[in-house]
Image 1 (cartoon, helix red, strand yellow):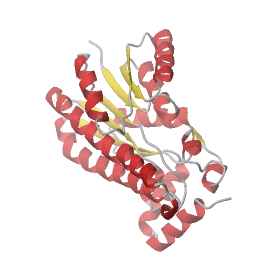
Image 2 (image 1 turned 180 degrees about the vertical axis):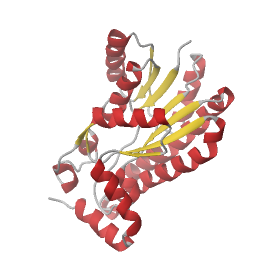
Image 3 (image 1 turned 45 degrees about the vertical axis):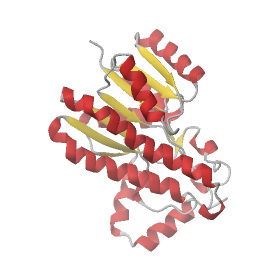
Length: 259
């Protein structure tokens, strides 16, 4: 019997690399993103390399009925994933007062609402089977406020907090929840956030999506609650707990400054 994993935001970046890692370890995959062409290309690659069974489900997860549509289509296919990777999300660079309100709301809808609803919809099947793993892609942004990307940082703080709480609630029922927290990573994130050429954050050395994905999948398989990629990132995340909040906020704002 196939063991199924659902990966959202699988058409590129960390999500694509997580799909590759899971395929290499024998999972059948439900691949979800907005671009059907990119999903089909990935599915063909994984079938050729690993014989992976793939279901491609192209839709906008941030739409009003996105999570419900996706879970309905998965159920109609007779699939019950025991692994859920909540990777879909985006950020917008710029000051809050100057942001497009609709774009900001779209970020909240995808990064927070869709992740929460999709998890809630797929959890009953995991509970019925008495096993499951959930990997939520958060960020090192989750550990402090982020002037310059205020709503994005806040959305990832929500993902981190939710993940830790759910892991505490569900672990005794055979389900682990892992929050993967990478720093700046070589993906399409910076371009979509409109900060790639503006913010100092995207001008330093960045991790590769493949390395982050591999680290995240291993952490998930170990049942690790919080997985911060990179030694420096782990040190910075830990230091936030002992640093006055005004200093933390000022440093984050300096890192997000325009260059």
